[in-house]
Image (cartoon, rainbow, N blue to C red; front, side):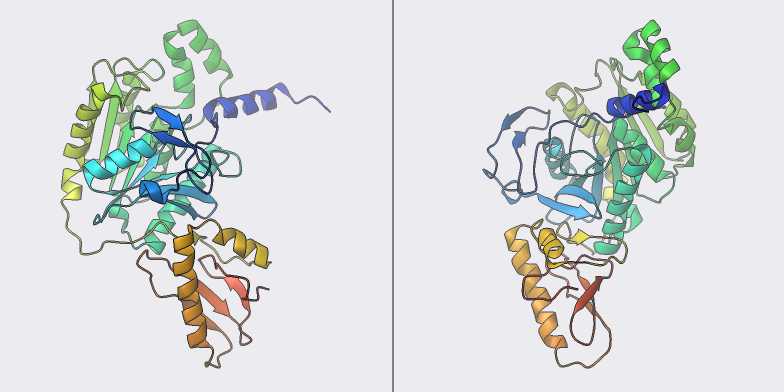
Length: 383
């Protein structure tokens, strides 16, 4: 049958409306645009600047591309879930702003089909993407769950709320949150007739109102009175349902849905966020994890060819490739005199906390990746 059922057709349309991936603002080698905190930009020529030029790192957690802006001495990390018309580099100005003003590492993760990420964005797949990032921060970088701050805007609020309902985190910030997709459709941008029609066709997704009662980390909800897409009343409903003991709901008179980081609101918004996070950020820690370099995978996975290893290698900046290859070669030379059937080899932590675990056979053939991707050059035999 060449014709899709009406339900399937509308399901595909709704996915497109919920996740309308924009043209990528970056590629694997660098940014394609230069962004300010309030979203203004100018185009860049491919290769004109690298991520290092912005003091940023592009890295992969599982199949999830991420961009990070490390802080020189922070021990907390803010994970940002962007709106549905952004990608991880379109919010680069926001990430730099939050890093500098709050004194934390900042990181944004990509949704499937956005930017350079493969797959299809769904309620389930974006949770999986965030799970990869969370595991990477814990297992690959040494962050404790209470070191992780989840910050969501618009569709991102539903993503981080659902995740925080099932995982321990330090705190949660929700900017322009909504109760559910049907709730947004029903509002119809303020048009009751349009809302009635849209809500009758929409299927239930991202029911934040049902899961926020299971969030026990401190929660800050921020909304604007002039939000024409999601009424501030939905933020109020979420606040009342929220299961956190420490929670706060702040409404900004005149703020809309897409002007939240404009000059008019940015200072007041930052003041609320800083006041809310101060007790968490004041907690001392001797650990200053290094991260944002590894190509990381959470499960044992075989590499079938030298090509796939070299492809993963190309995802790193050249300076990181040199550091990584030096670490691997040093360990391989040290292992050459050992006579064990299998050896778990853990590369010493580099200054960027780049950890590689290899499983080696007696003949020194690399057969599997244990928890971390192996990045190898041409002279290493890959089976």
